[in-house]
Image (tube, rainbow, N blue to C red; front, side, top):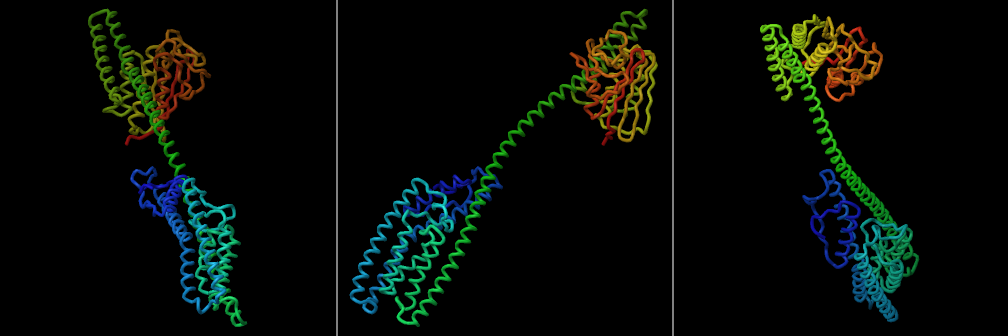
Length: 530
């Protein structure tokens, strides 16, 4: 397996485990990854979990490799050691008949080990080629994680080997060295916990007999010693077996928890990718919304500056052509020239996103007062401006909104209302600012779905563009800003004023009746200038 590769999920762990097992079955020591590579697909948070899972897998596979080696070479090695010790003591402990029987049993044990080794090697090759199960055991199998899977017939092999070791120990106590392997491989070779306990106790009987100077016990004293040693061996082996089982369960739970964390990290990674895609979509939508809002702002600025300025210029030029004397014509010409210069300046400021020029060096009340006075002089209509409350400096956007609405309202009065008096009131209250524009012109009926600019009865706040639609409603009812947007093909009028109010979280209300004049009111939050 390539060094540095990290198994970050259950499938990768299974692949790694099979590769390491295959390497172990061929007698090699597989390289173990020590670090997470820089190009690992896991993020910083996932790397810790992946490293924990990798270390747990390393521990488990290393334990399995060691078990594989012991299961293959442990029993034959102990058999050879027991044979050597028995040969040294054969003259002292065995009769001629016992020697013949021991030789036959030894040959049988050697054949058993050779047959088992071949089955073991074939099983390991098949497991490496096909990929054995995660636990490698049938239902009910009880053993600590990390112990290897074994071929079928392992229980029979354990029983026959234990029986041969018992008989050989009966003949010569030093053959108990061969029986010692039963302490170590009972767990991997026997499938169920009860069988494992019985196998361990059977091995304890053989070892206790060897330790008590051989089997069978010759007298009561030997029986007492044998039973005491058997109790001690049995107690110790069962205690350590239980500890191993609990440790194995904890290791198994830890491996399962790490696998679950890896799956959770994979789900989290997918969610992060989905969130990244959603974030990109939101950015695109925000950009499109910003473009649309900027287009709307420029359109409104063009309507409030260029369109109204050009209308005023045309009016002055027409008045110049109809002037009765050169002095009056020159007056109108100069007014048209001043309007052209002002409109050009406002257009440049709008393009650069600046506020109205009137607010650059004056507060809102002064700018509105100057606007009303100039309008009254140009239209020859009395106009009164009133300020109530304590004047406070407003945020640039709020002040510009109120000034633009006042400009639009006065422009519409000049074009349509035929008013004889106009009143503009700017009111500062605790948490809002109100702009009220009233005229005594011809008014209009807000309940009519359409009204044309050329019809009689249009008020000062009616639209300046023919074909402008007007919202339904009671003439005396105050309408919210969202309801005041007329459906038009061009121009801004009522809809433009309502949109401006909405842009600063304000409301736009209008009241009008035919022949009774019109009143509009704009309420915006009092946002102070910082």
